[in-house]
Image (tube, rainbow, N blue to C red):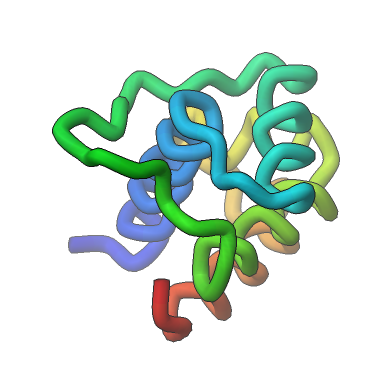
Length: 102
């Protein structure tokens, strides 16, 4: 699998988590608001889970990346065909979060 595709796929999964479930923390709530404001919606749902994911570790880290990104970067990253230059700051940030525990 192409590394850029893997990052983009992870970003889409994050959009689903942040737009369908509350993380319970301010940084995660702000990230969900940022995605909504930028017109980025997730199609994933957290079904069968008795609780929403905790806003800590890699989830919190990714929320920080979303909050630091511009709408142009987010729209590009979640488009499925991310421009490696346009969304690079966001994708670099999320790839650093990938090594963290959830």
